[in-house]
Length: 70
Image 1 (cartoon, one colour):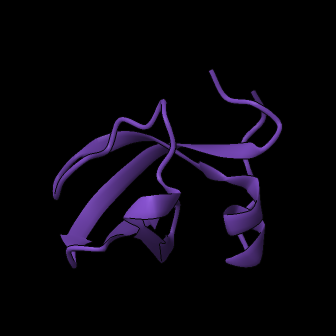
Image 2: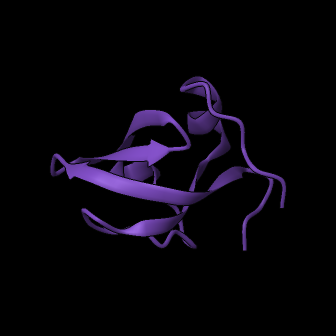
């Protein structure tokens, strides 16, 4: 379940793993997502995974992403 303090994105693809962060394709935007920002409910866990990504709302807003409606 996603709450008001989180933001969820669908059809996210992990395209690179730097150890402490994933480079994710969210829509047409490539974004580095620190592993510490990935929240419960996320489906992406390694390169090539495609699915739901849940991050803190603060993080999403600060990198210029708008969360999806739930």
